[in-house]
Figure 1 (tube, rainbow, N blue to C red):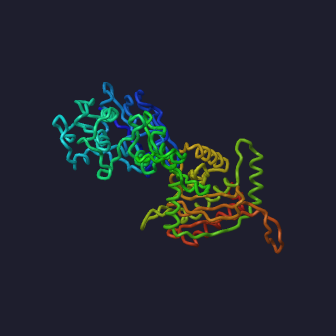
Figure 2: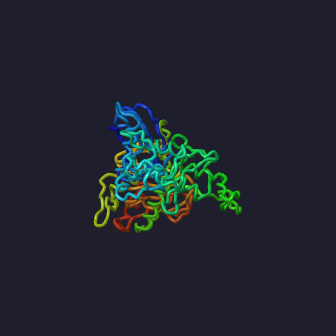
Figure 3: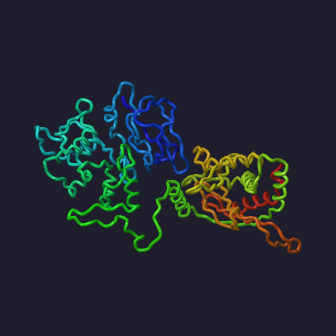
Length: 495
């Protein structure tokens, strides 16, 4: 029996992902443990291994497809002795198809249950059988309905003479007439006819691609398909619109205007750029944080001359690891959280908060297209050298998209440091469900008053953003004061 390859859930909160790349093609032999695809989530790109043995019979979702729903069938694996017809049989609609706007390949899958629940009357065919009586796969039936092909006139090549997609496509290429001998009523059915080139040959394209081309006036005969077997998919039409591919001519013979006559024609030099999956998730989470979490902010200035002296001495004493100011900040926050455990909490919902017993510090790392917060777990029990090694390794793998979910999910406290960019002070947005985040500014020479004298000192401003639902002002102030004490007296962190 053919085996479905499903879109995996790579984390507990994952609902969809991008199919970045296939490592196999149709006809390839696959063994358990073989890498078959790469899936891109909002945080990383991860390899997916096969758990079954067989031959790749059909790839249903092309690489590059975005927003593929978890548990959607993305391919078919054939067992020994099965042929291609078994792959068509396996295209069962038990799994709910993805919305057309989210996955053009998913939009072609039709629920057999839904198809049989409300069949529409079909005109009698020339051999006395109606299209409804013909044995056909759900996908073949849908293509026939959209293109107006009479299933009763199509010879099936599937198991027991079942009509499959290839049979309908062959009939359309061969000029099969619409059911009932008439034209397709697009306004009544909502279906789009198959696109034809100048020679009358069918142009293979997904229903979503055809719909987009029709709405945008793009001539599909000028579009190069990048889907399986040269099939035109959504991204091809989008590229054609962006490049200004000529629109299809009107039936009256008039020349159509270019499809891309948008704001640029009026002299606008801007363009619309689609948000990446990561950027969409960041946008969603930040809106939720600022609208649902009652923030308050506490700021203190920390003198770091002593810290800089100890850092210089430690780096001079060993060459394999270079300790940064941020490593001192991470350790200071971890020790302060152990000293003020009432701030080491997270809001988990109405009437519930989580109390952490270790300081798992999330460190904000800028990566192309967004940011990610890998976690230094149990930082209160790690020295500067270990913290430095871990943060550098996590940051490198974060930029390469190689972090495992457990390395960036969770955490009890966050640190965001923009000091290296010369930012003096800023207010960070809390990373839910955490209750606090520390925003660290640049260390700079400032005049300070000591014993009635104005003297220069290297000062760094730190702002603590706090969730008032679980941490009150006094507790937040106590935590920030503890952080300041450790930063200004770094020898305490060596004990």
